[in-house]
Amino acid sequence: MTDFKLGILPWSQAVSWPEMLAVAQRIDDLGYDSLWAWDHLYAIFGDPYQPIFEGWSTLAAWAIATKRTKLGLLVGANTFRNPGIVAKNAATLDHISNGRAILGIGGAWMEPEHTAHGIDFGTGFGQRLDWLDEAVAAIRPLLDGKTVSSAPGGHYSFDDLRHHPVPLQDHLPIMIGGSGEKKTLRTIAKYADQWNAMGTPEFIAHKVEVLKGHCDAVGRDIAEIEFTLGVKLTIRDSQADAERVMHAALEHNRTPWADVEDDDTFWCGSPAQIADKLRPYIGLGFHTILSEQPAPYDIETIERFIGEVKPLLA
Image (tube, rainbow, N blue to C red; front, top):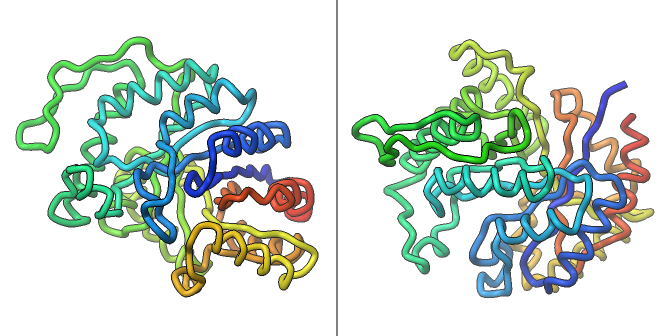
């Protein structure tokens, strides 16, 4: 029997802190495997100036309020922080949570929040992905208790850098999000313990083949990488009822349907319909499913995902 893992990311925009705290505790009580936060400074759906909470601070607070779920950013913006600080954040979270931290990271994509905060966005996505590769190459040995110094000519300038304490976990996992074929998937092949991907089964099937090629090139077994699928679920007895709930949530988030109607990660339906949509991905090796849930949080969906959809998959 396949061991499926489920996680929830509660959107951190258009919400109050008491709501975020309560939903995290409910997710933990329901037995979810993981709990995730965004790493954004502006809201990413609808009006960017809606209230939004910072990711690492959120995870630290959740670590105190929960008991069993693993905790991570889905995914962290490499551009926001020096990678040495990110490694320190992750190790600290691991101690706060008694060994439940995951270090999620990606190249970053939202230019307005960089511009407004004066954060270097680089010359383009390709350069940011070069920075990501260099960052993760330093983060991995730091988490493992090793000393890091930068090679000349890189973006970073680490000088005999070492960290104490090391994480509680013997091997704190690194998740990398994205599917860029030339750079992101190559970095994933070299360093990632988990890969987060989104898209149609056909799109992702191709990306799996590209990732396998990169793994072969660097001498790594692709089976060492946990495939995680990103979706946004709304579950009711009928698809029509689920769509009504989803549209109301988008309205709360000041997000016109036209802004997201081409986003194939918004799934509405009954538990059986959701399970049917997931099966092609399971066939591709995606046994970890992570659903991002907008505020106001849809507790019925969160309960039915683990209570009804998961048994159908098993």
